[in-house]
Length: 556
Ligand code: GLY
Image (tube, rainbow, N blue to C red):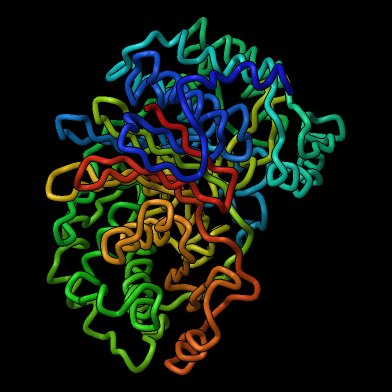
């Protein structure tokens, strides 16, 4: 334990779940204290927010293996201190041998499970290429130095938390099913145990020594493709070699005095967030009160209409034409809300037909960073499901994603998040699967105001939606905005999911009386938002979600 603590410099920063201090100069908020510390240490050493991104991301790949990753993908939305915005898409891609109907049997029915568990579920990973792309454009410290803390963490170990121990134990059977009894995570890891992962340290060293090629070519590429093949998958060394990330224009829109910048397609996050906020803008939501019947109704009706559009129109912009400006047009959005009335719930079946179920929890991870110069970085990265496809590269020390499930296996059949899709999100070689990840940056009157995002599959967009409104409309501080109880509606199934035991029975019966179906008993926590706020006086505060082990590190 002492050894582990000794790898963390404790002189320059303070960690806790809420910090408000005029003298905070920089902050990193992520799913793990180790990763937040490593990120802030990079800034303390003179690195910028992009350097900190690289070090934080690599640290998460070590100590948060359910979602932190080398073999997943993600999105970066940034704002430089001079007010320029941009975004990087390093989402996974469908392998060259993939095909539209690869998850269907001879009768055209979806074969259950193969898009989520095992080799066929794996998309061509984008994370390492994405981090290199960021380094090339914005990095100031040598790559070698940015990766070293993750190598140290994998070599010296990190302490298993209670939540993490439960997570390992919950997935143990699947780890064994996919990888055999001797797989690294077949062991019972208890709270307080230290996990040392030397194969992962060696993979990181390969990347340290050989750059991007250390992952996409040579020994690692051979290991990865061999493991994929053994697990029944189709990724080739050529697929790895050909992977490249894409700088894209982010989605940007106005909500009152806020300018909101978020990820565009192939994520649905930015477009959907824009639709929701603009649909509710004509209403005085502040007047209705936080989590009141009226504000829940209004937001749910906006969510219902948005997710219906998501299922029809969104996909990879390199493959499909997305009517983005039409979807975000204010007249269109006003018209969409014309069928809403305060007395009765709209019916999703009247808006568009479909039938789905919401099922298992999902894992992705988000971190937010501000540096001393005011550069802001908002990153959401994922393996998709918890530990991705569960396929583990034993000699490389990492899990492979199951991002292929984010495609629509068959129009009208839900994915693991209960989301429906159309042809726009069908599988094609080289295409990126539609995402809900919503890394977001908010300006208020042209000054940086908030950096936020969350995991949560289909609930990502609605969690970001609520957190922005909590802060801006309901005057909550950053931590309170993050802590506050959440709800979610995604058009299909036609049900409002409430976080358990957070909403009172009068409110629930009132909504029931208006025709809303409520699911509370079987629901789960919604999202784990990690966020930073900069108030009108330039004071920085952080919000690390207590639903996870999330933690802020700050530099004073
Ligand atoms: N895999 C979750 C998402 O991209 O939305």
